[in-house]
Length: 247
Picture 1 (cartoon, helix red, strand yellow):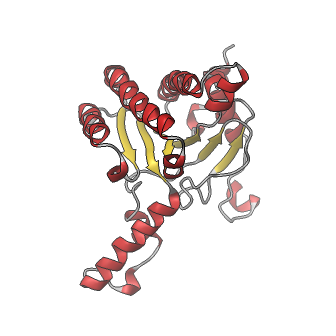
Picture 2 (cartoon, one colour):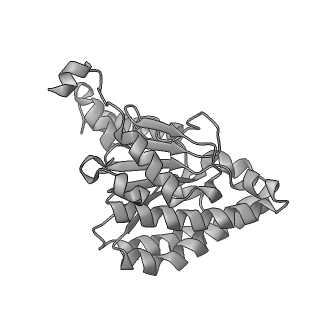
């Protein structure tokens, strides 16, 4: 029996978010350049997108490039930008074939113009797809996103289009870049670090957290399924008691 067969399709997380960590360390262990780790990491993105779509996950958000990553050596940043664009363009036909819609969140104004334009075309080409939504967090940080949402709401209050008493959780969520996307049910982080690293801080308030020592390039379809099965074994109470949840 395949590990996929152990997944309860009636209790899937609707939205899985992943911090894809360990590309550089994977390459270093093998005496390779860091760029080779990023290249292998792209192959893992393809595999995990395939299995997420296969088992019926609705949304998959991948922490692809953080605002802090802009501080890395220019050579690595330039190589990453080019790799991301080329990889997404290469995968777009398969995304369409598998009915996967591509979307992105983050500070796109910091992205090179060539990247913005070419990635926008990939999103447009998949906009008709109705299966898995693959969301790439590019030039993204949760603190940036929260500050931007505050600015947006403050402007609306100043202009009189929103009353101060109307500002609540729902309004704030609608000002985030993830508006229209359900909050993650499961957050996976690879490569052993036990932290969130400025990723979806508002949205993961009630997400189940799953950490693994496996580097992202080695993270397999079976590893993803194990994380989903682990999630299904947890009791999600959302502040209630076990007795209330049972009812």
